[in-house]
Length: 175
Image (cartoon, rainbow, N blue to C red):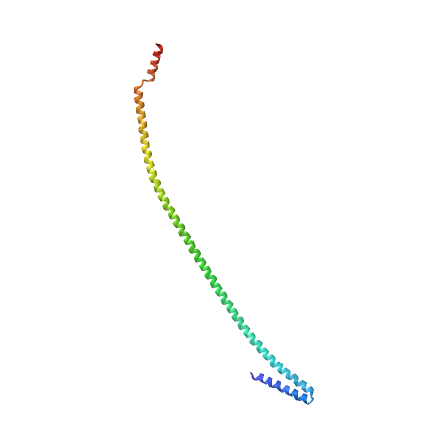
């Protein structure tokens, strides 16, 4: 306890003793005066203790407040860090998913391209076969037409001409 506080305690006790002595001597005026001084010093000590307690509590409150602010800042930093980490993961997963989709799409396109090439090769072979068959048909058609023309010439050479038949019919009619 500080010396100033001890002095106030002693003065308060002294004035209390003076109050008791004065009231015992029937000097009530002085007893009342000493009693008031006793109360002032006692209240002063009480106020000083209360002030010290309030100051101590305020300091504790300020310390707690600072600690809470630091804790909130730490939580905010941690939250921001987690949010940033979440966004990074989201971007990473999005890019990975996009690449995977592109890979699957590329495989699909490649398979389609190979299938088209195979179909095109088959079509080329079939077109060659068709062209060959067309050539054979055209040759057969030419042979048939040539045969028909030849047969027509033979028939024409064996048959009498129209003029000859007409003359023969006229001769028969005349007869």
